[in-house]
Length: 293
Figure 1 (cartoon, rainbow, N blue to C red):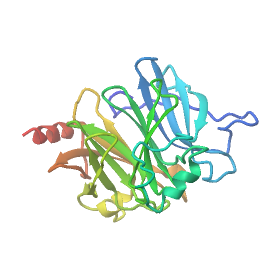
Figure 2 (cartoon, helix red, strand yellow):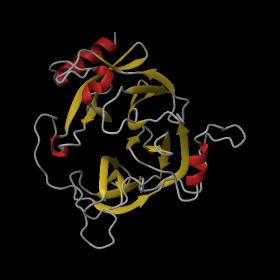
Figure 3 (tube, rainbow, N blue to C red):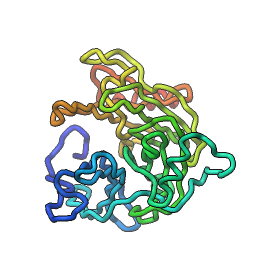
Figure 4 (tube, rainbow, N blue to C red):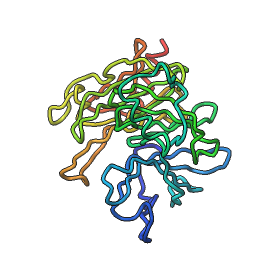
């Protein structure tokens, strides 16, 4: 770790719990872990998508664990169905009439569904969890408490019926840039991008951010080169520079699942991702210099 080129195995960050009744026992599903640092509590906070053992994808919860070290070990705290008993901040009872609203109403008492997810810490140190809800038809943006361990009850419902999953987000030039994918199971599809001046929205659709030639195997930008968005990594000490990270799912041989790390550019009011044959972190410097002209 450190320079993104040289890596050292630091062991297991979060181990499954063999005790009877544990939520993270062997056989549960843990996906898309993300770690953020709380500067006030000096704690590393991990959020992840959790499905209980034997429940398939019916649990639809997010879960939280903490550590004093970024490499762990992390201690499991609890899982959540977010924002139980609350209505979205942008929900108007007499005006919101899309046909997916029944899912929102159904889940209000016990909390909204939370599947594919990411977390984001803004410049003011407020943290948000973004996750697929309403049977994956809608994305929710939820404001976390100051310690990043729970939900404030404030959330915003975006793109109802859009069938977005795999959210990844960054902030550049004061605007928020979001990448998602469609819902096609384990099969790759065309990425999507959105922009807003506030986490609360409104969000504007920008289309597929990926461009460039096909990669190995023949999949091109129309299939996100076989990947699915998972995170946009800001480069430490390099403001305005980001790496878009994609999972390459291989359900027939999961241990061979791989990753795409690609440079991010911002051009003509859009977020842009190109897949070069080879690239280095130095290429991000060139993109930044071009963008500042």
